[in-house]
Amino acid sequence: MIYPSIDKILNTVGSKYILAHVAAKRSKQMHATGHYQMKESEYVSKKDLGRALEEIDKGLVHFKHN
Image 1 (cartoon, one colour):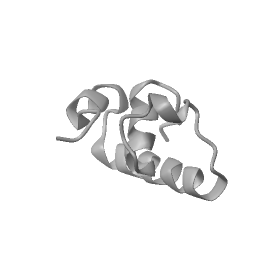
Image 2 (cartoon, one colour):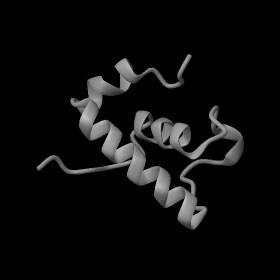
Image 3 (spheres, rainbow, N blue to C red):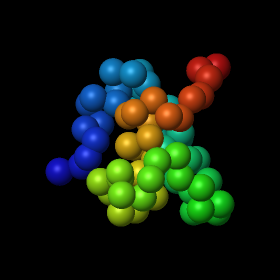
Image 4 (cartoon, rainbow, N blue to C red):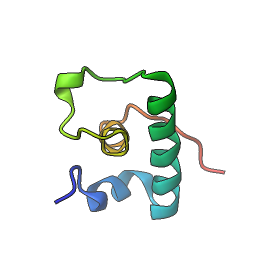
């Protein structure tokens, strides 16, 4: 099972396409810079994409809707 639940995140994001775009972009930033917004031990996921979804779920990633 995926953590965090995609359905839960969609309540705050609103669109699965925006969610995919934001998560992919944040994941690439993590990979390129090695900068994480939480401590390594606080993440459930081991991969950057899962960690990006966790950050979005916790409200640590901010984005604008156009």
